[in-house]
Amino acid sequence: MSAVNATSFLAIAVIVSLLSVPTWAQPDLSANSVFGPGSVQAGASMSFSRDISNIGTPFLGSFVYDIRLSVNTTISVSDPLVATITSSNLGFATGNATIPSGLAPGNYFVALIVQPLATEFNTSNNVVVSAGTVTVLAGVPDLAAVAIDGPTTAATSSTISVSRNISSVGGPLTAGALLYQVRLSQDTTITSQDPLLLQIGSTTLGQLNVNVTIPGGTPAGPYYLGLVVATYPGETNLANNIVVSTTTIDVVDTSPVLTSANPTIGALSGGDTITLSGTGFVEPMAVSIGGSLATMVSVTSSTAATCVTPMAPGGTPGQVDITVSTSLGSFLLVDGFRYGSPFPGSGEDLELTIGVNGTPTGDPFKTALPGDLITMHFTSPGGTFDGWGAVLIGQLYATGGPGPFAIPGFPEVQVDTSGAIVILDGNGPSPFGPIVYNPAGITIPFLYPGGLSGMTGIAQAFCVTPIAANGLFATSDALTVTYP
Image 1 (cartoon, rainbow, N blue to C red):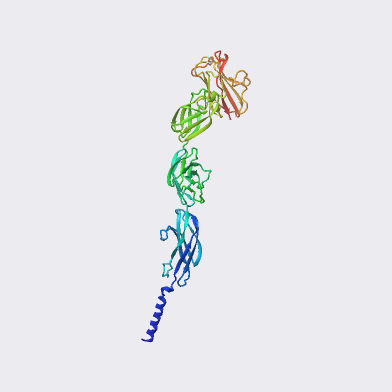
Image 2: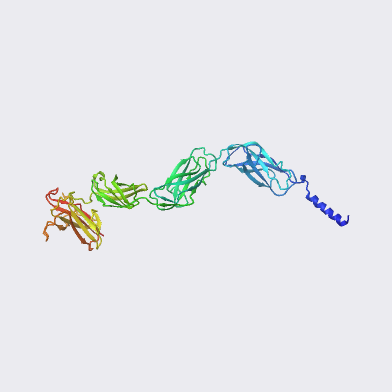
């Protein structure tokens, strides 16, 4: 063999000898022992001690080991993994592992599994099981509000179905039903000030459809749904007890709204047919006037209805409220109707009506501006005073100030003699002779030219006749016209 070949052979032999490290010259990690506490609660942190040694050749770097729990001493990958730790410390050491919150209570062995190094040849000593068991106690309940969803639109006072999802990621619910709320919010921050739609106890976890009602009077607009799960006995994690819907509900206000009644005044005995104006009227609709139900309620459109008035409360005159109610809500019109006149006459068969740019009515309060057409109409509807002279008397006084002074002994007279103006005296001479009450009544129209700003005029129809109740005269209810 030449010198060159001998040298090459020797080099190759050295390389092979370096690469062929015998197994006894490689690292060999050994799981020697592991200990846990006597007991631990599911969901809590468990401390443990372990002993890991290297009975092979030294190595540089770190190693990885797992901690598992097992109901027996045969360890498999199906046993709950509670910790995976990277370490460079051999020998005795302590650590912490988190017990799954849903782990069933019971006795468990603690297993230490050292993951083999890349160059490790012996893995038969990489697993060790604790000599005793750890008792896992029932975990602390941890309710989670997972999701809530509803329809895209909803009407006020309507009932809608919403889907809520609640889970328990902690221990069992041993204290009975859970309590939760559904709230409506204009933003994604749910507070106790947001309208409460539902508060209920339940033993059902997971997804569940429930019915809630949108409160009447809720302003129209977009709203989020909020699911709020109350703190369960023993629960400590409250960070997941509230969830907000990812989309909004467009709330539409369809509750009834009452704007006016016509006429606004009626007899103490009731029985007057009035027309109600507003929005959101639907059948069936109930109408309450002064706390008593009206009869013959008829909804003619979404903006109009008619009814017959009940008797005045206590049979006494005065302003009363009107309430309209449908399946979608209610509305209260304060002082929407008056029983009896604020300026009553003798209560006999005389009637005065006044119109401003329209048909005369018995509304006791009218307003006129310069250029308005004021029409006064007075009649004896039952014909009692037909053929007797018609008289119309008026008076002016400062708006907001004291009105005409009462005439002692004559409460049916609403104008006083000191400032009364005779608008028409049917008993006096005229080119046509006496002006008397007749079936058609008497109409006096005139154009208000202005000049009475800040004043209020009051008018009252009279009939001077011995057939009147007092033997002298009968009077209508008086009406007013205010001139701003």
